[in-house]
Amino acid sequence: MLRMMCVTAHPDDEAGNFGGTLRLYADRGVETAVLCLTPGQAARHRGTATSDAELAALRRKEFQASCKILGVSRGVVLDYYDGQLHRMDVYSVACEITRHLREFRPHVVLTYASDGGFTAHTDHAMAGMFAALAMQWSGQNNRYPDQFNCGLKPHRVQKLYYSTANFVMSGRPPINPSPVTAVIEIGDRLETKIQAFHAHVTQSPLFALFENNTRPRGRQEMFHLAASSTLGSVAQETDLFAGVKEED
Figure 1 (cartoon, rainbow, N blue to C red):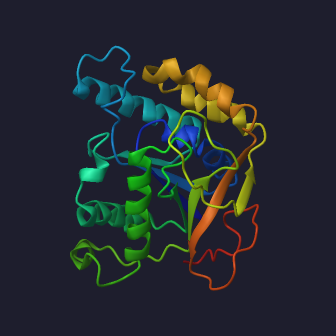
Figure 2 (figure 1 turned 180 degrees about the vertical axis):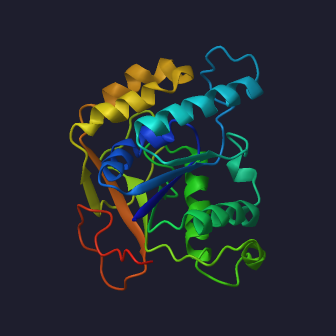
């Protein structure tokens, strides 16, 4: 079975940035996973939570509900602190992501570029940089070799994509987006994507803003091919699994 993993920073990222693509490939029989680095406990919008711990617990449940809507078979939320990913030890975080890559063994990985996506969020940028390191290191037997004592083996991811877009959001810090190399037509899965975002009830004050930004552009999700196990120039793609070998 083909496998795809998405590495994000907060609960709701999986829906807002990648939801249509995750649902599309799940519908095509691809096994999908989302690895979320923080439980989003520093969010401005907090629902009924009266503490960071309560908000984290609520957002973990919302994340699982969203993953179910998107057909994600494996959704994992780690315990790094929201808003502080830039302070984390790079080697340690990459180690944890590498372990998940070696366990799930995805053919394709989705994440953010160093621009932090169109919101320019620092956590998004850091999640992408951690994931890019882990994507390279998971296939190398001299990186975190202690993981092999638990039965894991090196795993070479075939393609790494960054989420990107052909627009920028007003009122946000300026970014230099990654060029679009893949356009994924999600069609009516736009509504599924919005439904999954609405599963994040604590973030309900953002629902109208999200829909106003998403609906005019929402039947496409765009990506940049950042790394590939196949040598050669980059071609425009409409399928993130183009050229992927299933036996790996």
